[in-house]
Image 1: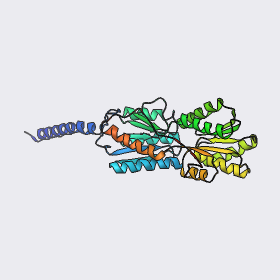
Image 2: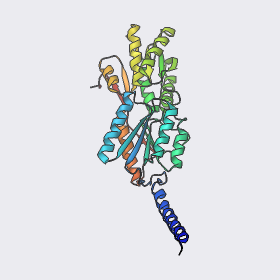
Image 3: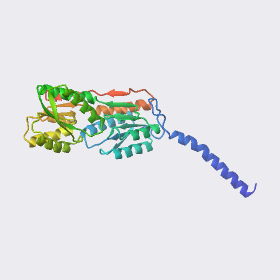
Image 4: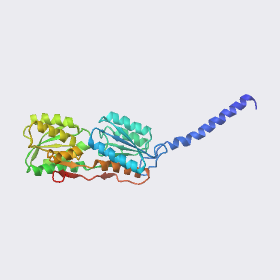
Amino acid sequence: MNKLGFLAVSTLTLLAAACSNQGPTDAASTPAAASTSTAPTAAGSKTIGLALSTQNNPFFVALKNGAQKEAAADGYTLTVVDAQDDPAKQISSVEDLIQKKVSVILLNPTDSSALAGAVQQANSAHIPVITLDRSVDGAQVVTHIASDNVVGGSEAAKFLIKALNNKGNVIELQGVPGTSAARDRGQGFDDEIKTSGLKIIAQQPANFDRAQGLSVTENLLQAHPDVQAIFAQNDEMALGAVRALDGAKRANVLVVGFDGTPDGIQAVKDGKIAAIVAQQPEMIGQLGVKNAKSVIDGEKVEAKIAVPLKLVTKDNAQ
């Protein structure tokens, strides 16, 4: 064989070897189908992604802590990304988790509708998604883990109906528009109030934020001085409302919060907040990782997993 012939045969041999190695490598890096029987991938078999709406809220910090503890106990790596309440940023973060080929994505959406496309991308990449605390509209997830926010809103209303002897005016501080938590808590509260002698005289978003809870309450108190109670759809807004009431010397107005954060519970103990519909954020995080592991192990999980609520008042705040 001449020199040119030898080189040609050698080149063909190398190309054939390269092609034969390419197929198994690509297959190993592709996750299995997004279902309850999903098997882990070689690249992300011990990695779970956690996409949080924000870490500037004690509730979601507790949720993250619960997830981290459970992941560490099970020997899994938890990759946490923070959207800082920006849907566009969260979409980008979820896309990054998809590129990293994590086995499962735990998603606490900033916006229930805006994140549907990102969940669909994960589904197309055969990466299962589990939603935590807030649901996603228009996209398939393996399971949704949350408290029953409609029931929680109803419990808040029932407390005020009883405390005010079924008579009085109420201001409602709403959460981030577009989130399932704000929608469902509002639905439960509003529907219950409609059947009572209480009247909602003002509703305005304060975006689950303490500073906005303060400023919105200050404005609403000036516009609606005849108010006997404030329902805030989370503890951060309730704490802001407390500061506004203190500034206005309105100690006679009852405040009810929602979540059960340490600051919120302390305010109940101090008599600043009348009651809180308390969730268990750490348990939500723990259950998220537990169910992600079940999915990876090929076990079936429930389509919805409810985390119990508890009404906290000064009588049981300890």
